[in-house]
Length: 451
Figure 1: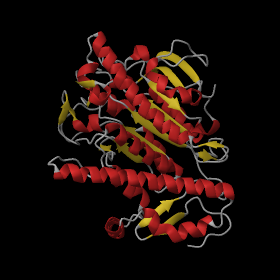
Figure 2: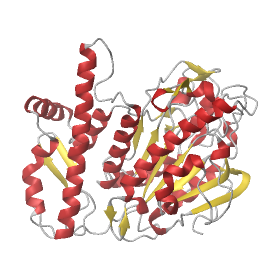
Figure 3: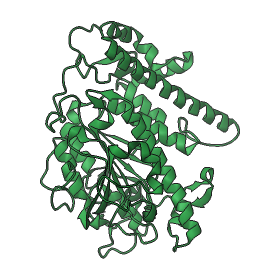
Figure 4: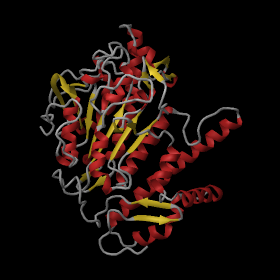
């Protein structure tokens, strides 16, 4: 491939079955979409939603002071390095996750409603119905500028049918993203599959051939694009060369980590254990690989919209590696038992620590006049407040990033309780250039995000 003059943002390094997108370089023209529409000048704007199940221990989540002069409670302490890059938002609610006459099923409703603001039809059959989720509204508007309109990630595989919660379909408790009222966007949990999607050219036959060749000769995807990479690098300035090399190194490092997970699975299979190839046995490692894939997808502008679910709603995963052998869901029904409180806090802090890894990676990438994190809006939260109460008001919500200069972070912003969470989503869609009149049970744009 020949590179000359300005390089298109859509340029990719290509080889047999391989397509490696490029990070934003100084030699590229300014993006045509979303960021300019939102008032930014140097990079596209991205949005992501990170979900944790079963609520949190709110007493150690909510800061005592409002505004800028707040201290991070113990659960949020792992985010200390990013305090000035995020807002803690208090008082936001998903009213449609409450029963509203439908009885039990708070976990299923919590996840299904989190990004839709709609009441899920109570059914364990095929006649599921919810609403379009905010990520898919954004993807409909900005997806034409990227290879993938959206990217759905997770660490728990989910059933798409059957009864998983008090008469609610498993589709509700397994899916956060909804293309239509009856079409969930199933998340991918296998890092190997995600990596292949991000760095292959989309032609299954050729991609499979390239993958087999890489495995047979122990080659990297970067070996297939070496000529293109060398040709491009020779035309870049010193700053762009550094960005380019850092990006390719990150791709290779992640590829190696996934390969090691594959090797571990091979060893386990020989020992009579079963786990899908590509999925690490270590939960924290699994989360971080998925987060790093998300970062590379944003950095290479492969997508501008993503969701990630740490665990399905109602998850009863145990956490023996942090001295919590009991199941998460069981502990969330704590009955105000102090010993259970302490274990829930450990789980909450573990999740927040993994989220801090995502922010660290985003903030460590220079882009335009700032960082990749500056050009993002990242929501972290749960559709349940306290797991024992199963409440869906005063939800634990964080908003990280500066929204390409349209959000003022570093604050604890308190809204009147029962303020629709979907009001926040309307404001985020505005910034993505995907303005719409309403979403779910929204009543207005959320005020005070820009200070």
